[in-house]
Length: 131
Image (tube, rainbow, N blue to C red):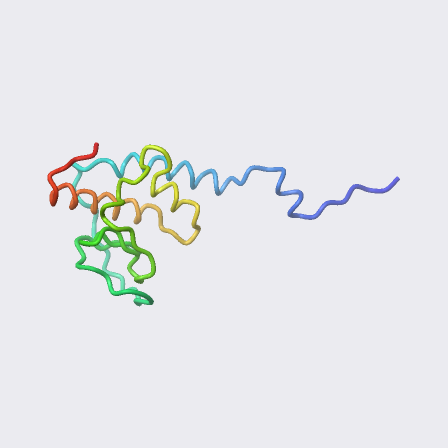
């Protein structure tokens, strides 16, 4: 009788990715928190990030990895930006935070706070409140 052999990848496919599930759960909670426009901003970061892309617009709030700017939300290294008119895009179905949870390099808590602060700024600028 031949022994049943499987690769590690084949073995792991049979189990849920617990790290991915935990990240999705965190993203769901942060999506709700990012709608709270009445809470004060979180603390600002003081770490230095080397800019590898476009220069950032005027910064309103600076996080560890992300910034709320006059443009919208920008990664502090200048390589990823979300325009302010898109801040609420698909928030009730597949939010920005859920989208970013799929990218392992994203600091989700920092991104969610930058998104929330950018939404507050946009609400003050336009006088329109989404939630």
